[in-house]
Figure 1 (cartoon, rainbow over the protein chains, first blue to last red):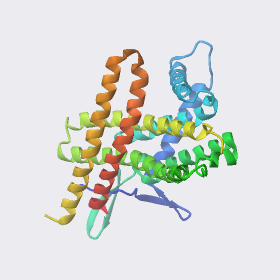
Figure 2: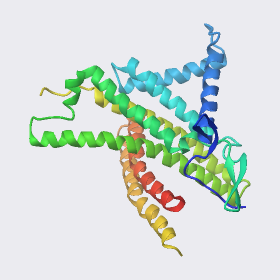
Figure 3: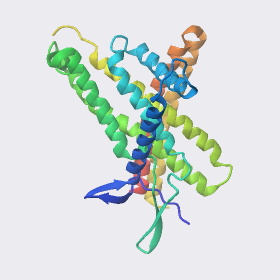
Figure 4: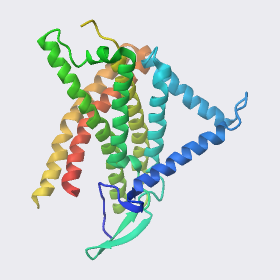
Length: 247
Length: 72
């Protein structure tokens, strides 16, 4: 049996001209699970919390204090986006480690060879997902910057005519915003896709016992990448909303 | 031995050199700082993780280039 790895997610069916890929299907399942779980636990909140409720409260409380440490007065505004990024991305990252993701699928054949099209695939190992997150993060920074400083105040960050050196700094800031898009999406995609390839290759070489430390590594990497994405989003939101000097 | 395979190996081989050194320096300085001021461990740890993520991203770019060379 051959080892096949494909960078692009494979399409499994179509809904009226829109191709549905296996990573999109997995995204929907993870979303459904998260929403169902939270609704189920929050259905009846009690004064003395049950264990699941205490777990959710500790997660939200921990994230809130983390966000409050960086964005002191804007915490209430930034917290929903940053916490959603963290919880959603960590769920998506860890869903790639579930047994069955990447291994159960359809057998298709092309050019005489038969290959496996998995039914589920790690959603963040698909560049589309991570690019979407990066776009949301960068545009949220622009939105909050304009909201807090006004269009004129915010554009002072990029268009600074106090002197030639400041002007170059402004242009570099603009380029750096674009590069944030690329860096966000490729950091998450690269880490997770490389993890998937690593697990596939190790399981292909030695199917028993040997994948265990790599699965442990992938659990850690999934957590760290979600934390890094959320923290970097928070830091850039903070930078975008801090006011500069006069013109 | 095809040129493609050599290209892929060189891409990730050289690409991991810089970030490896960078992360080592970062972690070293962070440990130094913790040694001098153990009370600030949490803050230092958070900022160190952030810095390491930036440095590692460069290595990830090199890895993505290597994967594209191999699979596309």
